[in-house]
Length: 134
Image 1 (cartoon, rainbow, N blue to C red):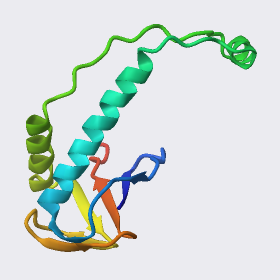
Image 2 (cartoon, one colour; image 1 turned 90 degrees about the vertical axis):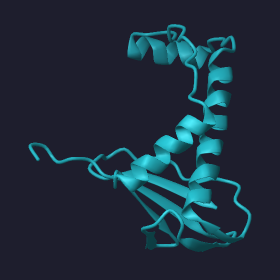
Image 3 (cartoon, rainbow, N blue to C red; image 1 turned 120 degrees about the vertical axis):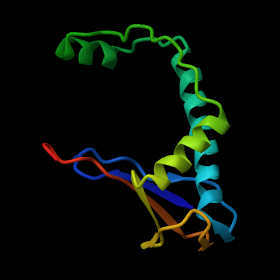
């Protein structure tokens, strides 16, 4: 399943992600659980990659001259939340209406609503952003 995450009101485009979901009938609650697990795994992978020693190439040095910076300062590793905490937070945010879920362009309004997932299905998450002053 391809997962699209777009934030309304922000121009930055996020990449679509391929999340392994077996075709069949599942609930949005199960889809969110799968997505949370995949995101935690991706976070841990990014943390491991940041801890690797990086060597500057000649192209990096040229970019550094233009940017005025040659290397990123070492970043401290962050501890990810537990799966249970992240899952509960994602369910609560859905229940509070902080984001909408669409599966194959159909909005899903209940966590326990069954949806049919195909290999070509697309899940879109739309996070709502408050307008200035309102």
